[in-house]
Image 1 (cartoon, rainbow, N blue to C red):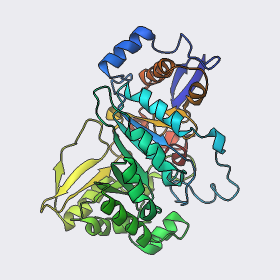
Image 2: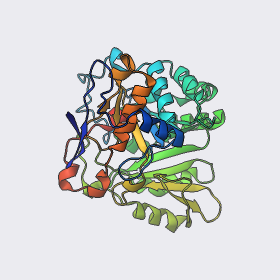
Image 3: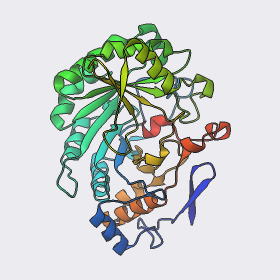
Length: 378
């Protein structure tokens, strides 16, 4: 019996695979799987359903953001995954189809920078054709740094992408260039956002990772820039993802401070969540100028409602953003495993899930080994 540790102090046994098949010890049997499919719901040890699937399509990125892929680690000599290690579009789509039978209704494509994956619109076409057991289309979205959107927005929309999230950490050009560390200008990302809006990839969301002493002086300016535009800005607390970004609690700007700063300039009113497990706490402008959101995984852990699984570029499932290892599904997808085998394996992994990293975060856990965000997406 192998072991997989998701977070410090939590070790979950996982039965080994033999000859590309799932073991009979794997967490669910055929009858259980039939019941789960009939209910269209598989829940973990804390009764959190599997609802969201985040798929990393590449581990490569054209930025070297200091909080994600610092240049001193991901430099010219860094060894990215070889092409044959990446899941094919057919393998990704097959896995996604199986996942929808267990309750997944939302898919987000991530990276690295997902738009660097060649022929990405083809994958979007394949995923957009999937349906839930009730016949509903999936909620299909993508997170990008925006660097290629001027060229790609129309093709992504035509392929079936519904909406998009753009990472933008500052409107100040010098600050933004320093944070992406490749001298990429703000104006080109803003042009990409305009292209996404024109293509109909709405609502467009903008994610700003806030780091004290680096870009926190631009919080209000970011909110004001997009106020009234229909773009929803979400401010994200600087997180201890991976082991290379030099995270310190002193660098975290609590979301309550972000809300206070914006509220002082433009009064805000709290908005109810749109669905169970929504990570962003929503606020709208009292005068009708739109809304913003904050993501507070450091100061206000939302582990209890997390419904997300992450599929890495090379086919591993991670049940927590802060996991230290994943469970391999590529061997199943490339072996002689049936869809039933894959579904049973996935259901078993999810049912064994007990992750709650943000709830138990401490100095010790923050320094522990964790998978890099660039490998499994945000």
